[in-house]
Length: 389
Image (cartoon, rainbow, N blue to C red; front, top):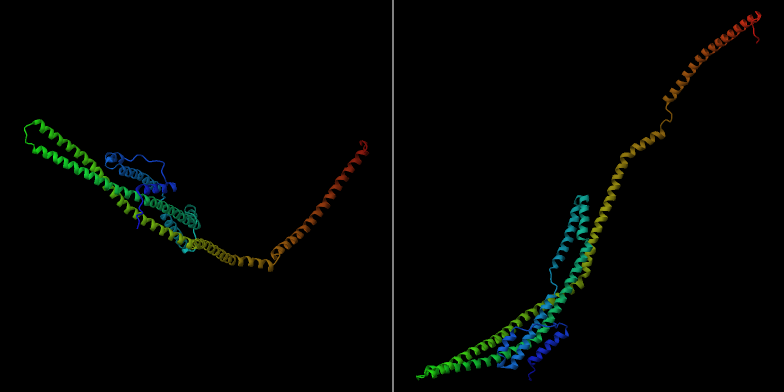
């Protein structure tokens, strides 16, 4: 079978292209701090170090994409709001039954019910909030899944470039090891020459010591570069394998989340009618409660009205019978009137007789007075003293 593995640059270009196609490519990233270290070992294998440098530089890009996608995820504890809403609906339904235990709803209980509806919302409102909260969570879950898939897709191509960088780093390490071994051998040879010198010339011995010191310095410098190459190879190996495991865990989480999301969508789509029926049932119970109390109020009002009618009906009807069938004018009143008439009649006869006598006497007195006057006038006239009448 032909080798179909892509080159490091092909992996990297494809990964970057995928980010660009998804619109996730950051505007730019700062220079990676590791570039300065890679400069120290660039002469070991310039082409390989260049590829490793570019790969690690793009690692910042992929890390930035992951951070941006994670920061945009909306995560909370909205399930508590759903639980609380269901609990409140059940608690209110039980409270309604408790209020009916004494057969009536007091003023304070009615006020409490109104306050509950104002603060918590009606049962229908709360079922609506449950539905809205679920839809919000489902929407955010879908968004999380899509973002996690983008992270995984971006990493899927990038990990190929990262693995190729690990391969190149191991090859550079092998070159650094060979060079370090060479400097060690040169140092051992130079040190052996100093130890083996048995001459008496101080200048020659100093020259040999200088060569040994130069070999020592060269070996130390090469050891530093070897350590850089070794750290690079080790950390690329660790980074690739660790991120592989972590991404595998992320893939498991995403798969589980997709399953939960699918189950949630399926559950809601097929049981939305159940939620609606619960809403209708609990709201209907409240309506039934009101209808029941209205009927009880009507029954109680009619019963008490009948009792009141029974209490006052007899007295009113008895009074009506007495008025309808009883005497109209009281005999005592008529007798009193008769007595009054008779008494007046008797008194009037006495008064009439008395007045008649007084009238006769008065007329006689008038007559006598007038006659007396005439006699005196006549006497005066006879005596010539009359002035003329």
